[in-house]
Image 1 (cartoon, rainbow, N blue to C red):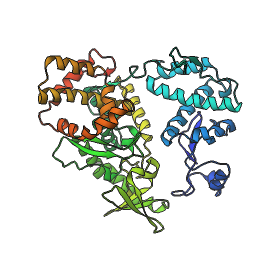
Image 2 (image 1 turned 120 degrees about the horizontal axis):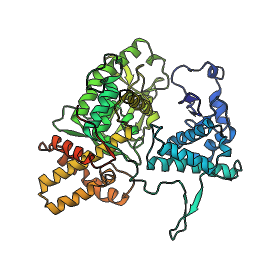
Image 3 (image 1 turned 135 degrees about the vertical axis):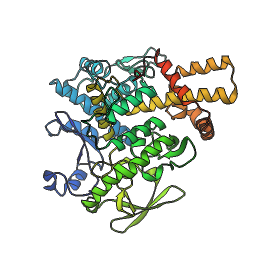
Image 4 (image 1 turned 135 degrees about the horizontal axis):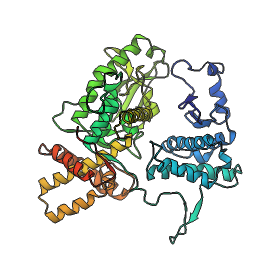
Length: 495
């Protein structure tokens, strides 16, 4: 059992695979060496999510939902998203002394207000994320109602006015795309990055009390998302062999996201040379130091359930050897985020993780750990009166905004469009989701993306992004100008 959350809230846990890497961290678990067999007899699958009450006791009705075919039939990505969504709502109810079985629509309405509009909640979310949370809660309560655990579901439904007569959730946002989307201007991003992650004060000077030990890693990760538009899971699960060289004579270099960690399917992405240099600096400094400490303390010697990479062939198949000497191959595209945690490489310095991002202990960093890093950075900004709040996906939105402006400039320079055509592009600029749908591969406009965009996207992006005449300063100024009238774009005052 691997626990992900602590404190006075419902605890989200994941059943571990039968083989464990390293010694058990819990003395209590060590008393039950047959725990894997016990879980199997109960129908608990490896890597299955489940929740425990704040005091660690099980709630059988909740456990049964996670064991049910309804939950198990969801994709791995949906299971990973739905489990913490349900955990948060149950914790919200527990904080008010309400048993989840007694929850009614008014309790869900209170939750919706707290999640989306309560000014005292610094981690308010947008419409799209809340819609996903509602979907998770609806699936949970629908199953409990079908089973007879609850008589009614708090996720109330109403008849749609459309011809189909379909039902919908009363609290579901009506304009998912346009509500509470947030972007950062380059100036606001740099301010947040320097203060929250880099140890600067609000006035732009170094903070003499700063003792950040992972500055190089955290700054490199932020630059990765800012300059590539990768999702948190995509950027947080990169392995060393997936990144292009920083020595290429281009402003943006092309790489590929593995299918098992992408949303839907693998795809190409572009990352700036500046971000690659940040990553290189991290690899040879902070990361190398963490690896050296782990090797000196014998941490890697204790790992039994790992695979050592021998090579990656031209077909993107990973050839590996286990600790017992067994050899095998697996497609790189088939490695999900948990699989990647178990792969190691041998260098001149010895064994080390294949994953790019490591903890201070030198072990692979689960990608959701970055949410806590960003939360800590936000707390620091708030403490220093820097009114900028950022989460990983906001960097993706901000990348999309900058790329749209870059494309506008590129079209004007290369194609000599007319003033009327320029106004048309500015109309497109009013809906940043268009860029997200095309350049970042969002779920909508599937036919366009599958049939027309992908065959030419590489040519288009290499043509536009690597044009030496692109005026970065002009693009930054233009975004800053737009931020003055667009409330969703967060800017920062000049120092």
